[in-house]
Amino acid sequence: MARIRVGRVGEQIKKELSMIFLSEFKDPRLGFVTVTGVEVTNDLSQAKVYLSVLGTEDQKEATLKALGKGSGFLRSELGRRVRLRQTPELIFKFDSSVEYGSKIEAILQKINNGETNV
Image 1 (cartoon, rainbow, N blue to C red):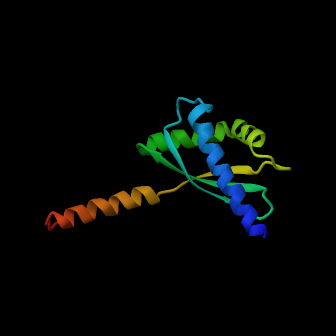
Image 2 (spheres, rainbow, N blue to C red):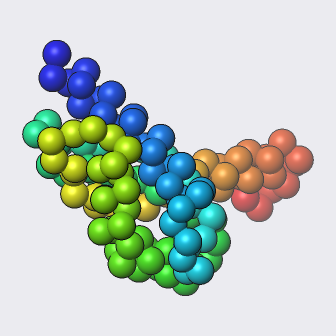
Image 3 (cartoon, rainbow, N blue to C red):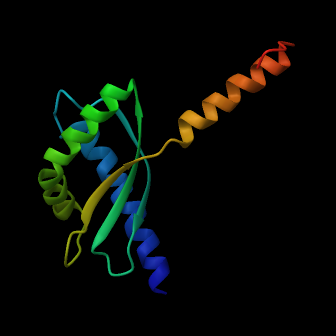
């Protein structure tokens, strides 16, 4: 029963953080960010937020710094939107699966076009 609640809380955090990034978190260093997943610990004390950022490596690092600086604001805003006894600590990590998928897509496209040097 507890795993179901943890999953629901994770999905709610994902949804709310996406909305906060769109409307309220105004930092010029923040790039095009997509929240791809959230893993919450069983005691709801920490939440690993997986992000996909569009841009160069420098833009990704700037985005991570901006999120690190604004984590207090994000956590307090999340606490207002999601009713929990304790708002989880947010840990931001990059999710490279989108980039990996597009790389595989490009390789498959080359194979379909008949190119030999893949």
